[in-house]
Length: 414
Image (cartoon, rainbow, N blue to C red):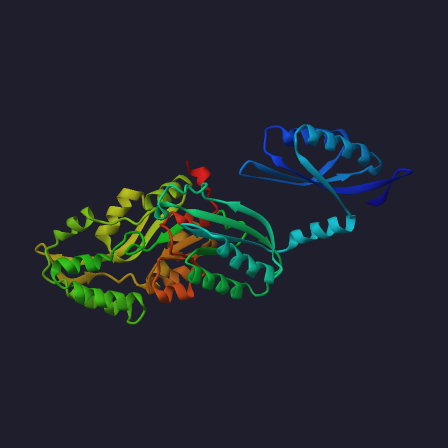
């Protein structure tokens, strides 16, 4: 309670936090605020949650004339009794209130937990990292639908979003510790600054092989050419970052010499699209996103995906064909790690999109550069080297898991 002057009258101002809990029913907020309105109460803050039909409504009010507070509290008590709700009143000093206002200047962050199922240990480990840094949890929100336990685990999604506030001098260390928890617990974690870009991404750049599709096309070609084992060994070594991508690409393409080019259609006909791709790109297109495929794979697959999913840009590699057969050579420059990052920047510039609004998604070492410069770089079911340096990762669900990292709720996507 505090004193202040109004003309020749000394008034007593009071701040009161009202907490109302009970079985949820229509009209609770309306009835309570109608009483508060009769006494001229100003709403400084309000929040409500509903968990399994249990309402928790909190209202922080300011009353300019504290002499009226007693009657107001009695009416609120009577109102809540009629509604079969429990109510608690907590007076706050003006100093406490101003301290709360001052905390609005602190940085805000969002941490997203994603898995087929989330258990209490996952939450305990993550929130312990927050508590150790005195980060305050402002809000906890379930983004996924209520889990249907009758479904097989592999068909479920569970996602929880934490909104945090506080000073964080060791942000990079927290990022690393969260990724350690992610790998140890087998859950996906995103840690982002909650700023104007976080919910306003506009461009997504996606690797193709082992990201957009669940195969390496060079391996598919190699199997049909009878050199599958040799090419697969080179592919894995390149994805792990053990050999230069351009050199590995040249060696693998050379092994395809003489293969009939008609196998391209067979590969397209049997293309394994990654889980969640349809949902992700359908939603993003509706939201006005630009979509780009930046791939060290091949254009003939990229063009098919472009037509099927409404992709705006495709940059990949072209195989040389003579007399209906592959020559073992390629055309133009190889789309490697450096080129992917350059193309991402070029597309963003052409579309007048800030790099902070760009999402990059990939699994291999040749994706690291573009993951590093994008506002949101996501290692997707990635190789160990990529996971080790990733700032965000998805390893438990499909591509539509990206929607949760952007703050989408399943309820919005029906």
